[in-house]
Image 1 (cartoon, rainbow, N blue to C red):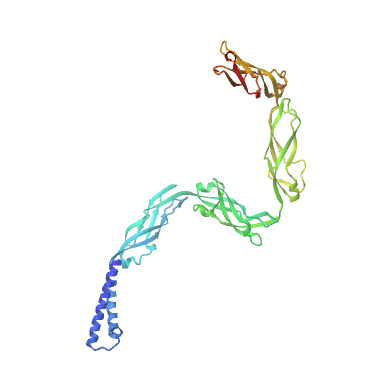
Image 2: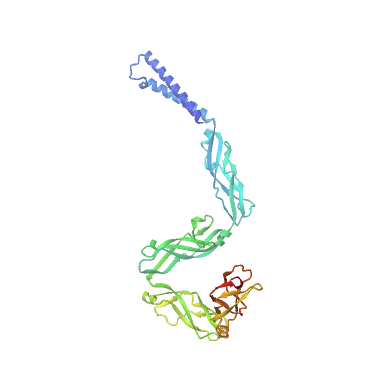
Length: 444
């Protein structure tokens, strides 16, 4: 099309030059004395008539020629089954149409029919053909995209409560005492699986954006089942929330200091003979308190009444009210009202050291003697205290100590002290010394 215009323009210029030459010739013939032929009335009239004729010819010729044009049209999705909604990221189609130029110039986007038929489809993802229709005087040559991506899903609605989510810090010396939302619930709608994945709605309340009366319009965000983080509504185009904002009214009060301190539980009495307390575990192991700053700072821990374990013979778990023996009246406990106490028992252990325990040499070949140095060692035994108390003198250990010289070819070397026949419930803690010098007597 542009080549044709350039050819016509060149043609017009050639004709204008020819007219100019003809008028110069005429001015010489009629002895015209003007400053320039281009200033004469004859020239201006002639040029006007010539240009008018050329323009008429250009329009007549150009209007009847074929041309191409690109038109963008909105896609309509029709016949969606009842109870379903769609997610269709493909909203427009670009068409290349061909026809007479004087007709194509009048084509508007509304003159193009672009439809995707959803009849009889179930939930799922599809690539569907686009039905296109142009005015009768135009032909569709090509279009993009060739198909429309569509996801059909079951549409559901849920009503959820909105909880306030404070952001930022309160004015110095103040704390938030209450937050009221109006409305305090909203309706979410969209794909069934995504709606059910929403765990709650929150209203983000930046404390530094409140007006003088503590009011603002708060944006609603939702929580999902995965990371439970607040997600802006704009990040999920398939879920809608109505309303998207709520009126928040925040009230402040003078600061009350809060602190989290450990919980301690002691025991009284003694468990059954031979047993001892191995551990005392408190769940939770800390508790939140709040109150006047001076009173809170004095409390280093929350001490609950002691547990009587007199005669206890097994591990126990019990629930204890969160009522300390002493607490400042200006301090209150927040959160749970009970603590679980787990008391584990173990056998009471004792140790005993045996000295001058003789060493036995084992594994010697026939006719071969070995000398050990030193001849005796000290061994420390650990076991239940009751069993330790039944052991004999300091040289009668509940085990045998020996040196294994089998397969020894060196004349002299150090070997470890080994233990055998150790009585049940005992274990060797230490042997001193651990290595013994062994010398072959018959090879000296």
